[in-house]
Length: 404
Image (cartoon, rainbow, N blue to C red; front, side, top):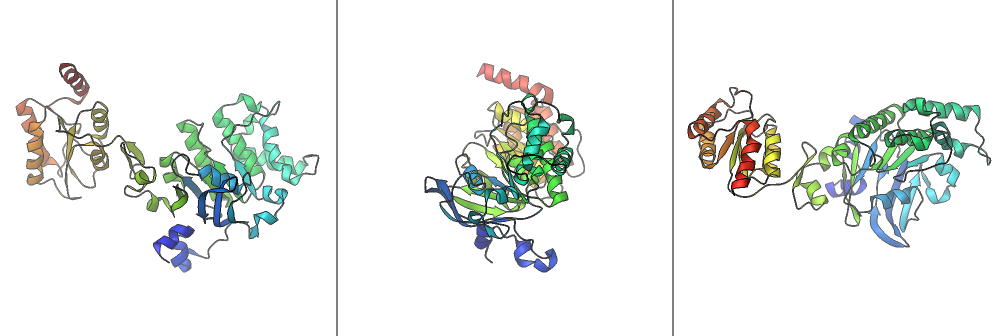
């Protein structure tokens, strides 16, 4: 199987080529085959071929307007497919009743429901409607399942609270409880963390990860937060310009400059190693030299970039924590091969740049054996009178701006 074929089908190397080592391939809960999705018969995305497997989180990422929500709305039958098929548990979804689908697929969408005069327990219990009669009367068994769902997502203490009088984070957890109360095989969510602060985003995704691990639930969701998609997904589906551009595990998708190209980033860049966005390189002759390393220089790089001051950074090994951020923002970066001491040639090259700078800052708490040679740069800066304490740098930069 070629790399192109793997990207088109979503089949991982582990599944396709190492079945004996990985165990038998699990049966897909949902499969799409050459699915085209769109509006009023006009396709927005063609050729969507993916599989949702038990015990895995699959995440759609891509620019605004790429069609992530359109795919999700089609899979939950809010939209009619333009072409292709969707298979649920081996059956064409077009041949299934709404009740059959609701017993196997549940959804949590971006719209915030506002039910009148309903407690959180009432909202969760609506997840049992696919199993009740026409009057929607809950049995004792239904109520037990609803109670267990609330316990699983840790919202039992909210059971008697008015659903409209709880926080967004609590509301999202209640909606998750409602979804799993349906006892689905597949959970589909559209931007479930959009209204949550960072604490509740992490709480929600850790909870989802635990449910997937413990129950074997298959999950398909969309996320705008790339750092979270990178850390919590098993498979990432990249949507771009009317097609599925790439499918694979995060370590294959979040690599090199692919994410920046996926989103058409022109100002700044996305750092796949740290899952962070940086402002981009500021061109020009360096005005400040940051003698950094070990992650200590990163806050200074961001401050200098924010204030529009070109800078140089080094000298550190290629494996140093500072390197990705420095390369994303610095006009010049001085490095040596990984796991090697900083040699005199690298120090000499950096020293020439440092002596042309107006200030040198050293945030390092100490020098070790690997970078002891860099003390030459520090000593030269002190002799020249450009060595600046870290806490005085911003004040110095402001004075430069005032005088310019």
